[in-house]
Image (cartoon, rainbow, N blue to C red; front, side, top):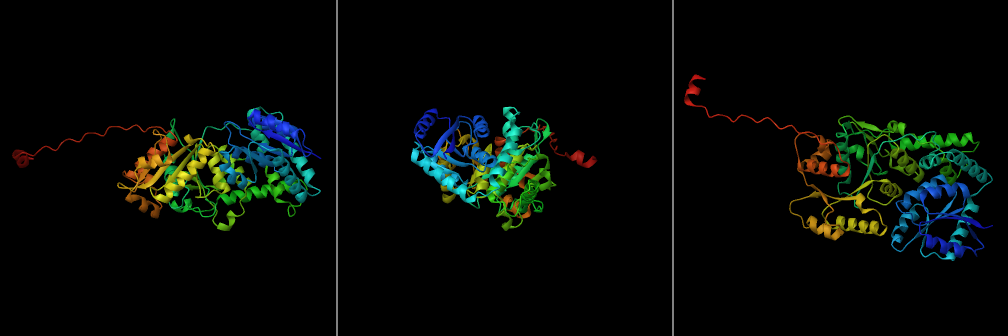
Length: 471
């Protein structure tokens, strides 16, 4: 039996060429093609393919799109067709469980992957799997078929009964490709800054998320407890999954990982319950979703947990969501980068840190990641450095108009880190505080506080001899 293939690519010429090649294939038949994300969702429900080939789609992040497809249709196999420049993303796609082939696509490549996919499914399938897939896919189809296009994706992923209007928000990911550069400090200070600001006269509702799952210290820097935390949320998601599986008459002890991922696609997203998993920093009102208390708990957090959490956060009523990441390229970090409206790339003015940022910027450019999302920040900048900001800008090949934000090496910073009292909450002014404010306002414009001119003090009149004598 031939494998059914859906082609998702806005390159019409490449699609026509591939369809022409596959016309003589004995292993694959093309069941549909799509040139946009909305069209792809409709074709996935209508044609029920077994393979999906993901080419390029303008104005859509392929990493996010592939994660969305995999969550809603985990039984499918996905192939990313990349140009020569996009092949730099191959490790990321492979980390997401997606096969990668280079353009121009050859018939033999696709047929070989189709045979591998068929072998994997045959090895993992059991007597319940077809019925389970049919039930869940039928439910998704019933839920989304009568919805307008703008709501179809939300309903299809989450099984939610409503699609509430959510106000615009900003998700800011703070990332540093090297450890020890002060990334968590900047994350903390930015979160505190936003939590004390207003937008259009209304106080901002701010959430900080520690996505350094195994060694995160965001809670420690604010002297906060780590219960509840992100793992508490994951446990609740798993309890919902078990209850749903039991309602379907399934034995939860024999369900395979692929089936758990498929069941997860039917869970509703409940943004109004996020605060059940957060702790509050009383001095600022900042909500914090902390990392797990035990390193071993991070091993139980799957990619579909992370995706569900990020999707729920995006639909929440927070104005600003700030994510502190680990200095790595794990699934948690990759998803946080893909979901972000802004990325703060943090480094120090030293050789190894500068080199890592340059390498990552090169990778992102070759993958056509929108560079306007990225703000480079040099932390612990001293008056006399071996490298000037202009030399660093030239090395990063930044446009002359692109600003490099800098945080000076302020003596108050170390004291702030050790005491757990943010610089942004300390009395008086400091160079680091002013720099954080400048960065924060560039990321998310806030109301300017009206500054009333201070009353001029009367100059002390020089006391005359008579006034001294007679008072």
